[in-house]
Image 1 (cartoon, rainbow, N blue to C red):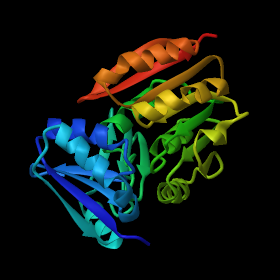
Image 2 (tube, rainbow, N blue to C red):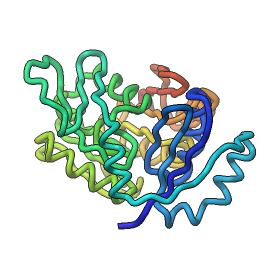
Image 3 (cartoon, rainbow, N blue to C red):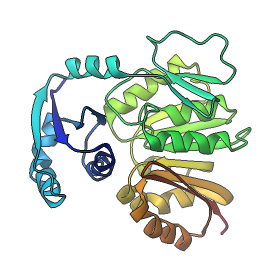
Amino acid sequence: MSNYTKLSISTTEEQGDILTAYLSDFPFDSFDYGDGLLNAYIPQEEFDKCKESVEELLYNEGILDYYFEEIEQQNWNAVWESNFKEVEVRNRVLIRAPFHKAHTHYKGLEIVIQPKMSFGTGHHATTQLMVEVLLDLDLRGKRVLDMGSGTGVLAIVAAKLGAESVLAVEIDDMAEESVRENIMLNDVGDKVVSVCSDAKAIEGEHFDIVLANINRNVLLEDMKAYSATLSQGGLLAISGFLEEDVTILAKKAKSLGYKQIQHSKCDIWQMLKFEKIK
């Protein structure tokens, strides 16, 4: 089990959100913000490959106050767990960790997520935007794809909202292992299948709804693959990008036969929902 590098950047919370979006193009596993510091975590061996590019990005953004620190993965997990707080979306979905007290009288969905080193624990604005998309849909009898599933929050919510089946695809093996663990924690193993792969995993598949909470570059590259899995009337919801990316992503979707039906945002993060019309 490898050590991790923590990149700590002195910045405002708003600028930290923008930097998070840019750094997401690199193999950072997770981010947190507090006391004027944005912390980004990446496996040491991955960081060695992209250190110069990361430093170039920071320089181009005018960021000079930052430092790197090597930490043991076990210690990092302990820190992450200690900072993990419950998240509630629209008073209808409560996301908590196993070490939080169960809400026995909660009237909505209670999702249990074991916090690990990956996006998608429910705290990030993009995950909450996508949960809201699911809450607005009738998922009964639907087959759902969760691309870039992180810790599996969206896949689990979709299953608990009545989806017939869900395929969760995650390229990072450690994150995908977390998805499998969380599937079991939430007793949705009869509905959710998790695979460690990329868009190749969906070739020849068919879905009624595709969820992709990744980043602009991956979305642009893989949107055609998503389109191939959807029949006319199917829905595609994407997030993980900034306002400046909306136009190019919408244009790409239109070229693939999609009609935009929703644009939402939370903080600086954006969500687009499309219907496949041809």
